Amino acid sequence: MLSWPSPWYPTRLWELIQPLLPPPKPRRFRFPGRKPLDDRKALTGILFVLKTGIPWEDLPVEMGCGCGMTCWRRLHAWHQAGVWFQLHQVLLKKLDDADRIDWSRAAVDSSFARAFGGVEG
Image (cartoon, rainbow, N blue to C red; front, top):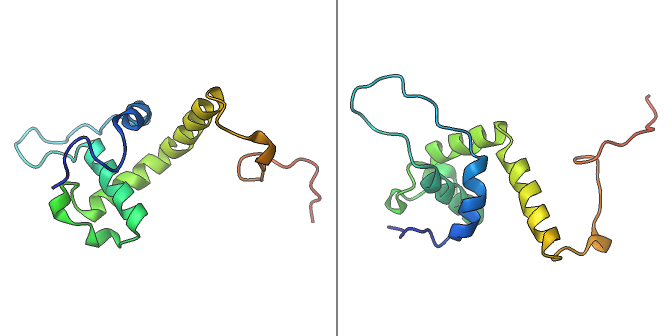
């Protein structure tokens, strides 16, 4: 079982990510039952699958990150909420403020900047 904080990412990175995450959905029932997976554990599972390239359904239960489909659904929900784009912006700002980006080597493409003046065909 992984120890917390997870060795997959430092606590300082978690402190940047956590405020970007959407609040959990309200639970429909008040009856006792399985509680939703903690966001940090889900993130650990997501990062493990993306780093190793294993299929989602092969995420080891022993890691304590829930099942692979839970992590995949959380990844998808966070994508829909714009978490990854916001995190990218936050990290770029932090790196730029620390003068850790060589902007002379940067490239701009249409995925982040709209290309005006294109010819319609």
